[in-house]
Structure formats: C-alpha cells, structure tokens
Amino acid sequence: MDFQLPHVDFRVMAPELFLFAWALVVITFDLGTKRRSGSATGYVALLGLVITGVILSITPEGAGFGAMFYNDAGSLFFKVIFLGAAFMAIGSSFGIMERKIQHHRGEFLGLILLSTVGMMFLASSNELLSLYIGLELTTIPLFVCAAFFKDNRLSVEAGIKYLIVGAMSSALLLYGISFLYGLSGTTDLLQMRVNIATTHLTFREIGLLPMLSVVLLVAGLGFKLALPPFHQWAPDVYEGAPTPVAAFLSVGSKAAGLVAFAKIMINGLQVFYEDIMAPNDWGLLVGILAGAAMVWGNVAAVRQTNIKRMLAFSSIAQAGYIMIGMLALNDIGLSSVSFYMFTYLFANMGAFAIVAIFEDKTGSTQIKSYSGLARTSPFYAASMSVFMLSLAGIPPLAGFFAKYYVFAAAIKMAGSNEIHQWLYWLVGVGLITSVFALYYYANVIKTMYFTPDESPYKLPLSLPGSAVVLIGLVGVILFGLMPGPVMDFASAIPAAFGLIAP
Image (cartoon, rainbow, N blue to C red; front, side, top):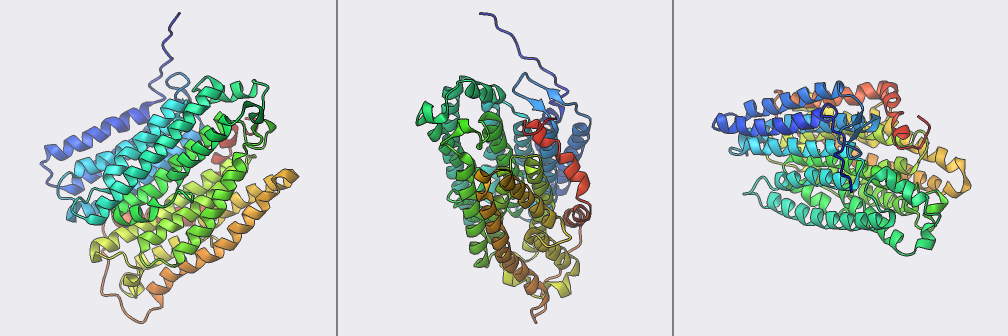
C-alpha cells in the first residue's frame, strides 16, 4: 500500500504558526522581565495580534495541509473576528492585570492567544478530526482563564462548571462525529457529503444512526453556542470569570461554535431541506432551539440585577437570532450570519470593556451601581448607551442591520417554498422578543441617565481600555451607516459552502 504525505504549504498557515509562536514569546517575556509590569506584557500580546493581522492580509487562499486545512473567504472573515475579539479582550485586561493578577500575567495572555490560534485553525479545518482538535484548543485554555482568580469562589466555580459542561459537550460532539464516520467512511467533510449523497439511500432507509448523529451533533454544538436547553453554564461562567474572559467567550467562542456548526452540518451533511435528510431534519430541530433561545434569553435577562449575568442571557438570545440566518441556506443566509457576528464583536466587546473598567474602579457588577454615571463619566455612559441600543437592534446602528439581514434571509427562504414557511413563525418570534430585549437594554440607559443620585465614581480615561471602547463605538456607528462593504465581503461565504455558484 502506497503512502503519500499530504501537500504542505506553510504560507497558507503562516498567521496561525506565527501567533502560536508569539504566545510562547509573551509567556517568556513575562518571565524574563520578572513579572514587573503587566502593561508591557499586555502591549507585547497586542503587538503580536496586530502582526498576525498583517500576515493574514497577505496570506493566499488554498490548501495548507492537504484537505485538512484550507483558506477561503469564510475562514478569512472569521479569522478577522477572532483576532478582533482577542485584541479587545486583552485591551480590556490591563486593569485586572495591574490589580488582581500580580503573577502569571504572561500565562493569562498566552492562554488567550492560544485559544485564538485554535479558533483560527478551526476556521480553516475541512476535516472532522482537525476541526475537533481546533475546537478543543479553543476551549481548553478558556477553562483555565475562567478560573484564573483562584482566590475568588465565583471564578473557581465558573472554571469548574465550564470544564464539566465543556467536557460533556466535547464527548457528545465526538460521539456524533464517530457516527458520521460510520455513515460515510471518511472524515473529510466535503467527501463525506459526496459519499452520503451517492449511497442512493435516504436517511430513513439507513435507520436510526443518522438521527442519533444529528441529535448528538446539535447537542454538542448547542453547548458551545449556549442554545437552550444547553445554556445553563453561561450565566454562572460569565458572572464568575474575569470580565475580559467573559467578553472573549461571548464573541470568540460563539463565533468558533458557529463555524464548527456550519462546517459539519452544511458541508458534511446534506443541507436539511434536501430529501436525503428526511426524516432527520436538523433545520426544524435547530429552529426550535433558536426560538427557545430568543424567548428564554430575553425573558430571563429582564430579571437580572447583575450586568454580567444580564449580558450572558443577552448572549443566549443573540445566538437564537444568529441561528435564524444559519437556517436560511440561500445566497444571503451565511452572509447575514457573518455580518451579525462582525457587528456583535464591536457592540458586545465594547459593552464588556466598560463593565471591566467599571468593575476595576468600583468592584461592583450590579446594574444599580451605574446610577448617575452619565454625570461623572459622560463618555462611558454615552458609549454604553450606544452599545445597548445596537444590541437591541435600534437604527441606524450596526445591530439593526444585523437583525435585518438575518430576518430578510429567513423570509426569502420561507417564500421560496411552502415547506420552509415555518421560518415565518421563527422570524415572528424574533421580532416579538426584540421588544423584550429593548426593555432590559434600556434599563441600563435609564439607570445611568435618569436616576436622581449622582454616581460617586468617575471612571478614568486611560489606554488601552478607553481605546477598546472607542474601537467598539466607531465600529457600531460606522458599519451601521455603511454596512455595504462588510456584506459585500461576506457575500462570498455562501459560495465557499456550495450554497450558490461561485
């Protein structure tokens, strides 16, 4: 039997290889400077992300390691999101590195960079095992980061809960992957789709195995996305983890879960509306979970008094809105999902950056502690208001167009065939629950602007935390006024998944 080595092109993998090496440089730099300055180590980490972004901009498309690693428009787009989330998370971490992480700053930043490497490898994975390894490299460093305040009971509890739930979701996902391999005889995602399609048997004729596979895969990925009923870990982990880590979880980890979902369920399996998938329609199953996420996430968020828990339930609801676009497998479905995650990056990371700055100053994460903040810290109050309104979907901010595009994609899909008309109901749920969302987002604004008490706290305007807030503010406003360039770039993503002709 002849054995051939896969084609290897390190140029295609240059951003990931560089960032992996830079994570080791950050840890070594912190040790070499005897951990004297958290700021210097933080700036070294930020420099590495900037250099990685430059390398990414000149990285060619194509295969890097046989069929296991492939750069295309979709992977490039999400790598930008991952690098942006890491940059803003680390930029928000300078306060806790000076006050709470006196030791092991290099390890803290290195773990965030290594998690980012996992996300980037995941985005280019076209094979089940490499995708699974990328997903694990994404999540395992975050287990440690969530419990990094080892003297804080909530932080340790967050790390343990995230570890247990993450291990369970990985087991379910790996079990589902094993069934897919049994069905197709390959771990190559594109070849898997071909093999299943050429069996000339529908999933009904194959038996129970496809149903188990779909359920296990949706459950495993549902944990990563915090879709009900797999969302229980999110509020406690967001509350207990260091605030920049919670921010990184809410954007980077969620985007990684979306990429994994799209690659397995769209590239690996026949899309759900084709006859070969009957009766194992993953679209309807995911639609039910998306509706539950929008309803429960928004209703539960109304009752929260802790702003990190409120943003956690908000993140659950946002996952429901995003999955509406994922179910619209047409020329704008995946484009709308990509645009949504891009704009969500600026709004959510910006909001968490202000929460981190406020917590560093006051030690509080209670919403009532923000009373009168507009009179003592007008820049942060105004910025938080913009972020809340964008997350609520108020025009002309970027969050409005994000929701508009996913709803429009689903409506177009529903109008194409009567068997997809249930998507109208899902869009209706999204529109109704958006009203609930406006209530709790507006409550934060009301607390800052319309309470009679003046806040005793004046938040400092200092680098790089204020710069992160400013980046988020510019992104939310700019891409709300000019969404076209981002959508034009994202329009190539459905072709990469074979949903439209390239």
